[in-house]
Length: 356
Image (cartoon, rainbow, N blue to C red; front, side, top):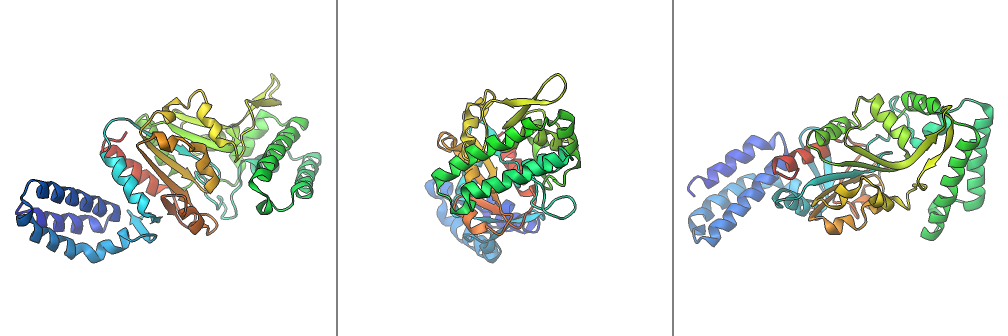
């Protein structure tokens, strides 16, 4: 007991410069130690030392523990959090047994809002529309698709939820139909993924490799195209081992020409169907769930899984200044098109705590 206060001071001073998160974990550990001491009837000797230690670092901890304030993790980025964030962190680290699984969106989540050249990065459909064919017929067909879309539905943000589902059912079927009609080829799709302006968020490749090394299931649930997603990952040198992509998967005939799509259409309003994917069983039976997305709608892909998991940590990526909206649904938000390092660091900590 007589070294508790000194231990706390040394711990916080040593770690504060490197990570607010580490310091907070230390505070949580210290609090649990105090509770145990109190239960054992030896709280009195510790009380003065603990109080002194906490006061000495209280000012530094205020920013890290305040609701909806930026919280620094390492030196990479800041993280805005809700109180639920710290609850889930504690659950992730103390629950014994079970495993960890990552379920993530792709466009603007694993990829950055800004592309390689600094302009707006291209999403999966943009990549196929812009790069899979250079013919004027293809360009005219895509232009007609957008004009027909505006004529039929008007501004998307004015649609009711029911009409948005109808929009998605219609638009994805039409877009897929255009690709079939114009005979898009496998080679053209591969080339499109290679030359597009899309880039992975810094730290994304590291996160995926970390999960692969520890056999942590990594699910990408996207309304885009499996072939494009896998092509971008391969371009960035990311192995596909252990990565399961649930998206619109293209099928090609013997000539390498698009002949159809495997399974049903995947769009933003039916992502939860990934739970029926043949390889999705690990996600449905693990006790710790990390969910990543850039829209509130992305959380629907894990609807119901959070109830089964002991702990479900949801991290959103704000690309258009929509932090407040995301904070009302996610436990934490990475602001300003920030990197993936924060999530990678969190997974590291869960693994060290035995959550893998």
